[in-house]
Length: 245
Image 1 (cartoon, one colour):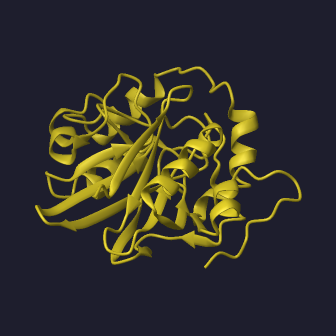
Image 2: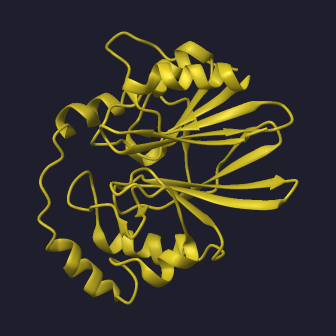
């Protein structure tokens, strides 16, 4: 019985994650994408899962979320970081908050820097083969990289602190699942990123800040549309998120 699904949107290179409690089939969905609404609803039906939560890591700039519409279709509750101004979300998460689905617990880790409110989420699942520790890092920590810090209240020094003192403090075998990858990679580990991440490993805070300031990346194509839409959970004017269960 599969309890974890990693899904991919090729247009935005976005990963969406479905977590399921094996005993109750209650589930939680992280970072859904608008164009994949049908796919995600079909997977919920195929797995027999009952969605309890739809969760955002931050207000994305490169795609529009389907979180509001998933909630409308399923009756799930919505959650988002309190610092991201995603006002329709029914739970405004702060560091240390937990979301429960069945016997499972997802814990919020505030990892600002890419945006001021960015959250990562830690899931420690007990399985017949032993415990599995996963962290969903949004755009804070990517595989051999990290999120940019030049817009949406980003701050390179703050991101360095989030990476080195929050995420890299997790056990080395914690599996890293980012919000994006552009090279076909699906996961890494905290130990590997701590030792080998090309943007962070071996750099001081000052060196990291200097390097990030010299990236000169182009503006995300959809930012002016995506960020306002994502602050509404992808909902159109007049649409409401149901209260859920």
